[in-house]
Every structure is written in structure tokens, then in C-alpha cells.
Image 1 (tube, rainbow, N blue to C red):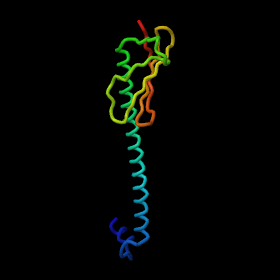
Image 2: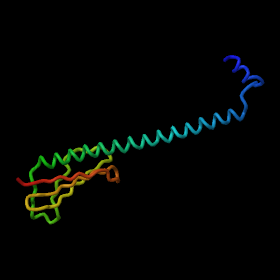
Image 3: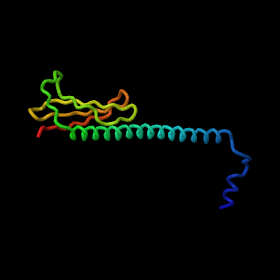
Amino acid sequence: MRRRINNLLKGQKGIGLLEVLLAVAILGVIGVGFMQALGTTSEGADLHEKRVTASILAQSQVAHIKSIAYDADASDPTPGVDYSVGISLPPNYSVTVDTTEEQAGRQEVTVKVYHGEDFVLSMTTLKVDW
């Protein structure tokens, strides 16, 4: 085995320029691919964090709405009923609550969560007057 290696290396005094350039090019391609994968993973993790936070906020707001009394103020001139946001929000997040009267004693409540100006999540539930 050692004799084979010695026969292959006969006449070589070092590494050629072409071999070095080829090795650098291969390392560059691998490095670029790694950096792109790292960037994509970072963006995915950020999106996941926003969605999980939005889900927790929407669930908390729905729980808050379910815990308060049914609001059927017929004298309200605006359509729907106003259930105010009753939870504390992290920075850059906002929550809107929209309601529509399905039938007497039953409302559809939609909670929408935004991060900055971007819509993230919507959750809909029913509120009934029992």
C-alpha cells in the first residue's frame, strides 16, 4: 500500500495552483449553501415564534371574552358588540375584536392578531346569552 502511494506521488513537489483554486471553489459553494440554509432556518424560526405568540394572545382574548357577561346593547348604533381587549400585549402586537349578531342571544366573535402591520392569526368563537 505504501509503495502504491509513493508511486503516485513520484515527481510531485507540491500542490498545484489549479488544485488549490478548485478546493477553494468547492469550499465556497459549500459555505454559500450553509449560509442560505442558516438564513432560511432563522426566518422559519421567527415566523414560528410570531404564530405561537399570536395563538397564545388569541386564546387568551377568547378566554377573556368568555369570562365576561354577554353584551347585547341594542341601543349601540355601530353594528356588532364591542368586547374590549382585556389582555396585556407584548410590544409590536395588536389585537382587534369584531362581533356579528348571528341570531338573538348568539354572537360570532372574531379575534385578529397583528404583528406590526402584518396580519398573523384569526380565531372565531361563539358567545351566547344563556
